[in-house]
Every structure is written in structure tokens, then in C-alpha cells.
Length: 319
Image 1 (cartoon, rainbow, N blue to C red):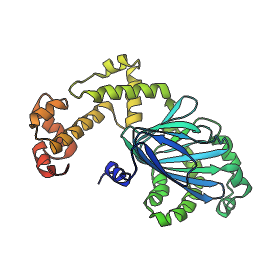
Image 2: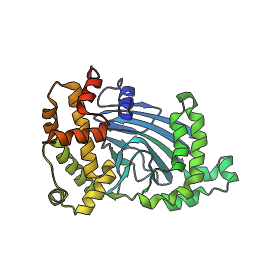
Image 3: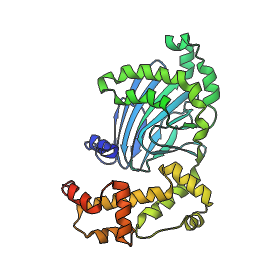
Image 4: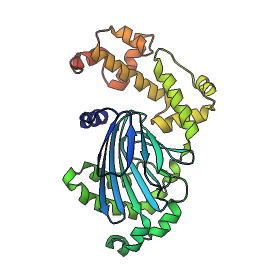
């Protein structure tokens, strides 16, 4: 089962328009389904696990300028609109670091319709006053970290082996062991931050207004798959230069426009092949391929099989 299916199955007991919450003081709202689980890890450290099948979720909590928040995207994609007109985009394995004031009243978009995240909040003043022994022995300076990370723009760090080493065991831990893993991994993340921050320039925040135009372009592209648009036509329509459009689309949706749309069309065709008896030629035209030969080649590129074979293998899946 893929990540989207796994999350949907895990949230099937949550009514639409509801966020199931366990131990969380966050106010979270969504038109989809969500679950938020919070943990008190150590004095000055709290963690939150979130799972959503939704297009968007809003978050509200008290502004905490002295708190450093780290948020890791386990799967899916996240576009996080924060205070100050900035948006940060995360794909699977990416991390954002920011002060607790940036996200006090914020919204997350989920461009793929689902996401899982892990958030760890560090009260740096409290950690300076009562540091865990591991931090004290390492000479860790929480207040210096507060000055460098809590007062400026959010930092976004792309997926790398160091992040995977920290978060993969945590995400895979069975629930009874999660609190113990959190104590270990939260401290490991703090000690690794100096090295991780060197990667932050590779994923820069962008203006929320530009991100909104990118999402509007995506809605146009996916609204009627029979129609195709050039980069130049899209850029002119949404008042972006072509470079900004291409770079912005990849930031929000994780792939270049052509690659994304090819996969989007083929996944839509997969649904039609599973759920209908429509002729393959009709399905090809419906997803934007006038020539069945081009559709067959594109389908094979994405699905690694022919449309007819895919239909035979998955005919009963929808039931």
C-alpha cells in the first residue's frame, strides 16, 4: 500500500471535517480528515505527530518567540503559509526550522492531498536553565541557537542522510516505544543542527502570493486534462515570468510541470481503467492524449506495464 492509501486507511475512522486530537493544545481545523498526537518529551521539549488526508489545515497556538520549532515531512508534500507573507515548501524527508512566533496562526496546504509530519518544539530558555545532561556535556548553547534561528526567516533543509538517520527510526517506532525514541532523537536533532543549517540555503522560502499563483496554475492544468498549455501561456495568464513559474511549480509540487502532468494524467487513466469499461482510446483522449500510441508509451513509462495489462491485473481493485 502506498503512503496515500496507508494514511487514508489510518484515518478512515475520523469523520470528514474533523481532526482527532490526543494530548494536543493546538487548535487545528480542516475540511478533510486529520489526526494530531502530542507528547511531552522532556522539560522544554514537546513533539507532535500529524497525519492528514486533506487539501489544507489551519493551525492556531500562542506565539512563542523563544521557542524553536522543527517540522519534518515524513511523506506527501506540505506548503506552509506563515506570518510575514512567506511560504515554505517541504517534500518527503525535508525539514523546516523557525521561531514559534512564525506559525502561531498559519495554514498548511497539502498539494498531493495527504501528508504526515513530525514537529518538535524546543523552549530554548528552559533548556538553558535546566539542560539535559547530554546537552550540558556537549557544551550546547541553547540561547545562541535562539538568537540565530528564532528571530529571522524560516530555514528549510532538504532531505539528506543526516535527517533520515534521525527521523526514520522515530517514525518507524511502535507507539509504545515512541516516547523513548523521542527523548533520544530530539536531543540528537539539537546536537546536529549546526551541521544541518549549512544545507538550509538549498531550500529557500518564497512569497505566499507567488505560491497562490502556482496553485491556481495547477488547478487550471488539472481541471480539464483534454487541454494542454504552454509554459509561456501559463506564465502570461498568472503574471509570472517563465523561470519563476517553473521553479515555483517544482517547489510546490515536487517535480517539473511536464513530469508532474505526465504522471498526473497517467494516474487518472489508471483510475479510469480500474473503475470503468470505457475503451482505452476514450480514456486516452479524456486524459489528454489524442494518439493512443503516445498514450500507451506514456502509460508504460509511468506504470511499467501496458494499459490493457494494467486493466486485467487491477480489474477488481475498486471493489
